[in-house]
Length: 495
Figure (cartoon, helix red, strand yellow):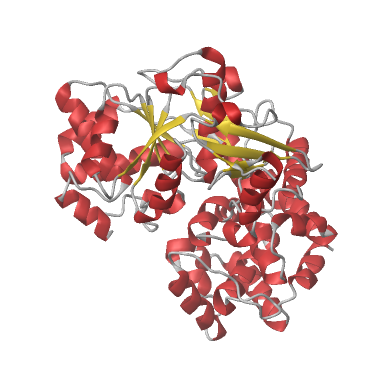
């Protein structure tokens, strides 16, 4: 067998014919986009769309400069640099077909924790038109009780006092915008690519809140001059495995140290507010709309909530991946009923979307056997996800007199998950959550105080004070204590 070719610029022309690759001259690209948070999703989504566009329109100003602000980003930075910032996107279809494509839209990567000035200068460069973010829900530093920027965060305190050596993304953005303002350079657009409802509005609120701690005049300028388009993003992108890396080596003769895997489906809906310019992403199927709210709400309340429903229930049951859950008729039926009975009745009208078709497509996507989306990844940082994906649906149904039992079982199962850190068979679960200890302590205390878990205000707000939900949740918790076999409780709810 031939020795696999290392993925880099020099070897591009020698790659197998079935491996699509950039046809544009990457050497001529400038980085009009700076992206903070280069993980699998960014590489399967924004970088993918941008690569397709660069392949077609000949515009050289929309390369991407990646940024990492934490030490945990170093591995990605190192590998991408070794590969001339190239990587392979492997699209896996349900029928087993694999479409590999080398993506070339990323042209540089800076580590803020090593050289914060370099990142600030790059963002402040007049060539930078957009700074985009995929920093996960927890990266927005929201005070769960007030909804404002959490000024008590030690990193925030540090950034206020050391504006040129920031740790949080908002410190970098503020320092760069301060420099642009001073130099008479128009403000860049800040584009959130995270799964958060009104992600642009939230980014604006957090950035202005932080900036006001440093300089109130600058905060006022940011409010006036910076655009924060809301966006809805969607593409299932599981964690890359060693098997994925080996498949590229054996089937396609390519040595890529960190490829990315995704499903075929891809969607990006954005409000068209880019004062100093943007790529013509509409030419590669990005949808620009006046108001993205109905689309993002649909996605958060169905796809993202659906992930959490299957992730928590499936983990407790003993499943490992989303497609395992969907192959189980009971889990598939429970998810569809949650969609129909609890999620859909509290959605807004979504122009151009057939909701029945959308829900059926979601379940089909979840069941793709070639996209092994691990439940441990889906349950990662659930304390940040559920307040965005699931709890708003509970609140809306409580206000309208709708059903809450499907979601209540998920919360009760999460309490069990947080208490035992194990599935119903006693097999350990990998729990990664910033509130892991608080969740564990509250779950353990549920033996004495049935609402202890629900009283975690950082997660649930005042939900424990709602008598109807507290009663429904307690009933579900009692069921979980009788038996951790969630399938028994799911079946009872469906009937």
